[in-house]
Length: 126
Image (cartoon, rainbow, N blue to C red; front, side, top):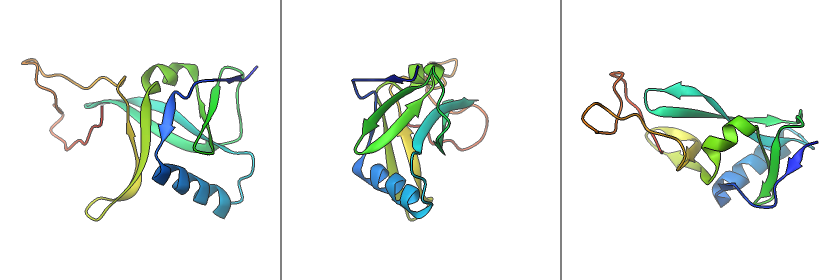
């Protein structure tokens, strides 16, 4: 049975909630929720993904935040507990969702420095 959590484990900022609601309304996606999940690790730590979904599984955790139903699988919940999702509109980088999770481990170099060792440019909010 789908587990509805009494406590809010992920929060959406008002901007993120409005962005999700606008997408749901524009696409006429009644009964859909925002699924947030771990999509693998990169050089900066855990990567997150999001999708609009209406295919819920018994092991999914669900809750509502700012009027948006959120669904998370039990493995991803470990990394997302306490996370905040925001919608940003940056003139240089464009607009999109940003996940800031205290449980996503950042990559540490040998000398204890935090950062990216892949030679690429990373923007990590862990």
